Amino acid sequence: MAKIDFYELAVKSAQIAEDKKAIDTIILDVRNLTVIANYFVVTTVQSTTQINAISAEIEKIFKEQDMRPLRRDGISSSTWRVVDYGGIIIHVMSPEMRASYKLETLWDKAKLVEIKKQKIKVKKQVVAKKLEKPKAKAGALVKRAVKKIVKKTKKIIKGKAKKK
Image (cartoon, rainbow, N blue to C red):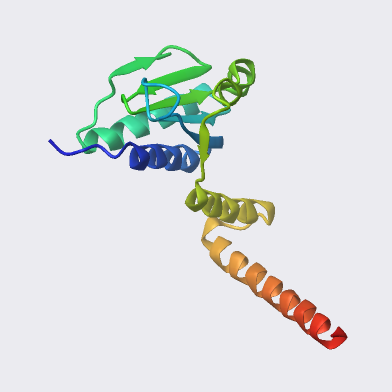
């Protein structure tokens, strides 16, 4: 039997949540704090539809990899769904539930796992929305923004070099 990479599954579930427009997605490394899981994935959603969509997509993708949840809780809940894969436990919560239960505070000794890849993707979507352009143009908008930043940085560096 192949060894399960729960870190990879945690990152994948966080990516799925972000792709489905979840907000404030985090991964907590709880390996040194509890035996119930290696990682918690916690994310916030704005609707029951999002709870269902994210949970269903995670289960679908993981099923394709022959991973089945050990337990599910909150199937009929409109505010919180928990999907337990043994090594990772995924919490999909409404803002009110997340604020009420404060899992990050409860597990404050857990290490926060950085999810850099997802942040870049989210920023591209935000740029496109702010300028009310189609998503297809987000790449071009980001390229222009990067060029402006590089140009300004070069000017600043030249200015500092002249002062010395």
